Structure formats: structure tokens, C-alpha cells
Amino acid sequence: MTPRLWSSLMCAALLVLIALCVLWEGWLAPLWPGGEWLALKALPLLFAVPGALHGRRYTSQWLSMASLFYFLEGAWRAGNVGAVGMLASGEIALSVVLFVAAVGHARRSAPSRRTRA
Image 1 (tube, rainbow, N blue to C red):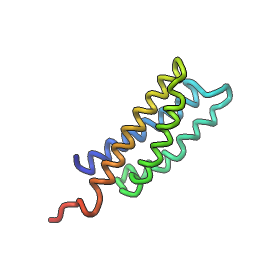
Image 2: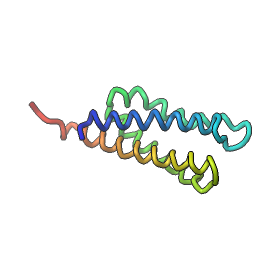
Image 3: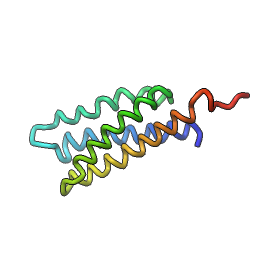
Image 4: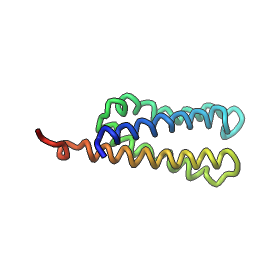
């Protein structure tokens, strides 16, 4: 795959993961009543949006590490029953896609891998 395709996949996974985090903690299944402030867990992902949209390699490097936090949080809460377990499974899947896409983009956009004309 080309760096552009990796970047597109990374942007899609990033935006859907942001939406999932905000909807999950804001309305769908907050951790506790009045716990909507936990939707702020999507804030670090918001900082990655401009760099991901521009296909910056540095953004994909740190985003690959940040996605592990969302994987761990999803794995922690996946044992719950009902909506929380399903949302956690979605978070796990999206964080894995985001990690793979970010690493793929970082690897394919490395200066040593660029083709020379």
C-alpha cells in the first residue's frame, strides 16, 4: 500500500474512534451518571487530526503509541455486559486499525523508502 492509502485509513479510523469515544461517554453508556466529562478522553486524538489529514509522519509515529491507550481502555471494559461491552469491543477494533494504519504510514513514508525520480 502507498503512504496515501495508509494515511487515509489512519484518518478514517481516527475520526471514527473520536466519535465513538465522545458518543460512548457522552450519551450511549457513560461510566456513571454525570460522568460525561470522560468524553474528554478523545482530546488527545483531536490533536492528531490536523497532522493526520496532512499525512505527517511524526503524527503517525506518536499516534501509533497513543492508540495503545485506547486499546487498553477497551480491553479493560470489554468484560462488561450490554452496551458497554459492545462499545469496548468497537474501541478495541478501531484502536487496532488505527495502530496498524499509523505504523504502516510511518514505515511507508520514511525518507529511506521514498522512490527517487
